[in-house]
Image (tube, rainbow over all chains, first blue to last red; front, side, top):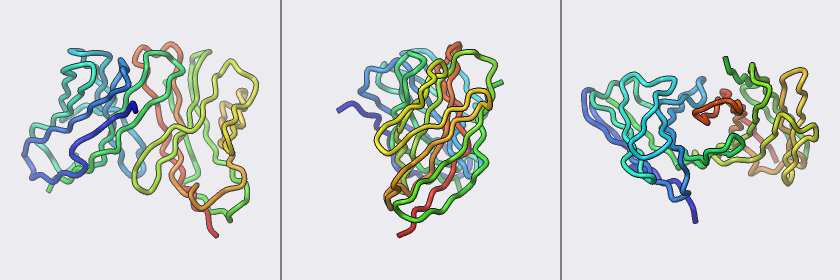
Length: 113
Length: 116
């Protein structure tokens, strides 16, 4: 069954630490997205990609890097984590048609202490 | 600029009743797509229903339906015969047809509680 799988489900790191969040999709979708979800803000786009090797900046990219290594895999990197990056992170994929919906991963809860 | 607004932070209803959740959007595009998603207590986010701007008929899927009022830039989600398991956060989202990123712009969500 086509899906979006995120790992880890939960992560705790210290301020200044390095964190990599992973996302793999088996939907054969071109587009992949990283969002963060915070109370009162809904879902905000960090980065997205339309194919292997491509990266596009979203609405809240500061402090984040991302890399799309293959059609299936999209990584979010926090190289100097800060407490403000404590959040729930979602990866999603979609087809490259305007009416296509997202398939979401289960989310990664990150705590930066 | 695109914007999606959900003004209802939370709603509580009795089981088996009908509930409507509001959503208004802003867009300059003549063609756009509106989506509703459900986020359960476990955090899972699932797609529920979509309305295409060029369609006059309101979309319906199961016990979900939409009230699309294009002149008011409004897309309400109607859940009939609510069940306890409908308790969740509901997000409205929009994509403009001219968007090259295919990104969805989300509202801040409405927490629905269905009481027995």
